[in-house]
Length: 416
Image (cartoon, rainbow, N blue to C red; front, side, top):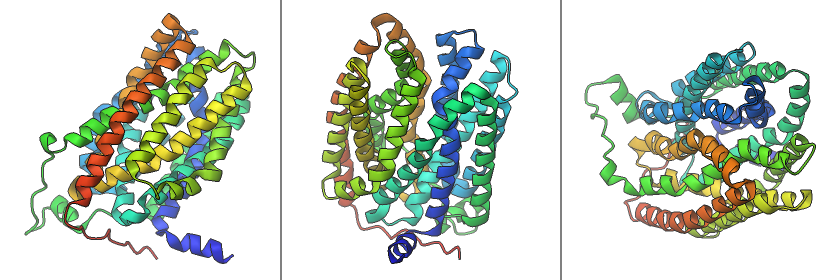
């Protein structure tokens, strides 16, 4: 048991609370996430485009709310934003149980978008606040593992609940969000640096909060744009891939759930090992390789002749995301000035909101116009181009950050 004690002692308790909360909420969330589009599709008279448009309201709201979320977490703290976000998401998930009309679904989806946009910039900035630079990719990998631990079991259980009564899954998801909120209130202290807290309280002697001048942060903007092909692929996996599988398999829901489960199991088993292995190589090379794997996935999803080929493509998808996620998050954390950490993660996170907003609708039109095979192949080409650009931007960002004067170590928060 010594190894377990060493593992627990390696990270701040706040990180372990995040891990537990992530497992709970993603387990519940992934019971719904792959099938929410189908739920809306069934409730909205089998209108795929209308279902895609309603689904897009959540990330569209995130684009707008996310603009303010990062600055709010930099001004008022990480903890208040995380608590408020989880409460908002829990209420919206519970609301889906009784929703019947298009307007109700749309309003709940918008509310859910506000909650999700508030949580992630604050949560990512919190990791940067308390984790030293050399451990950040490892911690981001640990959180990604926790996410996929829930994802590994959620979809297959979700299939059963979806067939019985989708309302059960919505209720479980709302409950888990409330539990996670309680854990944060109980166990996680505020991690916002003291100077920024003084600014928020407007204490005498505190300096005014610096403004974010976009002309001074162009690398962040280019990195966000270069990340769009990755998040676009994810947006197609959630709503267009199931429709593509429907044309090839009779029991396509089980095939889809199996792919997601394989992804989750592989991440749980391999994420930490791959993250540590990736640390031996320059970040820009790791990210270029990740994009290469994801590009192959686009072609694999499009042209896979059977289940075995799909499983190979899903394995490549998993390797790509395990390489990409921790490294790109670490790159953002390294290049972000202390006073702009929340805003940096909010700006970069906009790539997910943009593709989540427009991706399903664009995918639905492309799927109808050119078919799934050619559409996913086009995504593969975009990923190859995006990988070449992102590798260059990451190298520039990391080199610029390493040339700056050494910054102070992240402060340690005692919560014992």
